[in-house]
Image (tube, rainbow over all chains, first blue to last red; front, side, top):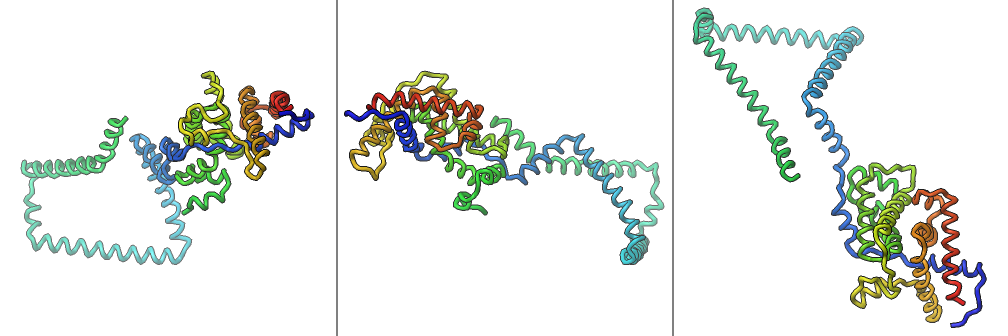
Length: 174
Length: 200
C-alpha cells in the first residue's frame, strides 16, 4: 500500500487520534464479586465505636479508673447543681420540700408497720433471746455470707460466659 | 437508604465516605466506576488477560482495604491509578513479557475468545475501507505502545486513552509535572517514529 509521506504534525495527529480511539477493555463477568469476596468490610461506624469502647474498657484498671472518674464527675456535678437548683429556683425548692416530706412520711409509716408486724409475730422475744455466743448464730451468718458470695460469682460467670466462648472460638479459627 | 442507582449521582469522595461507614453498595459502586479504566490500563501494560485480571483484582483489594488511609484532598482516580500502575510496574519488573499477538490474547482458545480479546480500533460508522484502515492503525498503535518504556506507556495511556490531565497523571505516578510532559512528548515521538515508515 503506497501513501504520500505524512508530515510530523499529521503523523502526531494520527497518533493522538489512534490512541484516543483505543477501546476500553473490560474484565470478565463476575469481576466485582471476586473483588468483593476478598475485601474486608468494616462494621457500621456506631457498632465499631461501641466495640472499641468495650475493648478499651475490658482492661480492669481502665474500667476501674473510668468508674471512679465517672462517680467523681457525677458527685461534683450533683454537689454543684443540686444546691444551686434548690436555692435559685423557687419551684424546685417547693417540689423538693414536698418530696422530702412525702418520703419522710412514707419512711415513718414503714417503720411503724414493721415494728407492729414484729410485735405481732413474736419476733421481739426471739431477738431479745439472741445470744452472740450461740454457735448457731454464727453458723447462720456464715451460711448467708457463703450463699451471697456464691450468687455473685455465679452471676459474674453467667454474664461473662458468651465473651469467653467467642474468644475461644476466635483462637480456634485463627 | 441509598441504592446503587442513587450512588451513581454521588462524587467519588462521597462514595468513599459511605464505604468507610461500612456500606457494601458503596464499595461495589467504586468497583463499577473504575473496573474498566483500571483493567484497560493494566491490560495494556502487561498484555496478558488472565494476569491483568489478577492484577486488577489485587489493585481493587488494596484500594478498598486501605480506604481509611485515602486522603480526600487528592482525586480518588489518581490514587487508584497510582496503585494500578505500581502493581503493573512491579509485575513487569518481575518477568519478561511475551509479545501479544495482535489477533487476540495469547491465552484465548476459542474463536469467540480470540475476537473478544483482539485489539480493535474500528469506528463502526466508517466505510469498510476506513474501518480496515482504523483497525490496522489500532493494531499498529497497540504494537507501538508495547515497545515503549513502561513509564512512557503509563503516561501515554493515562493521557490519551483515559483522558486524564497532566496534573492528575503527575499525582498518580508520583512524578513532577515537567517529567510527565517530557515522557508524553517522548512517547509520542517514539510512536511517530514507529508508525512513520509503516504509513508511508
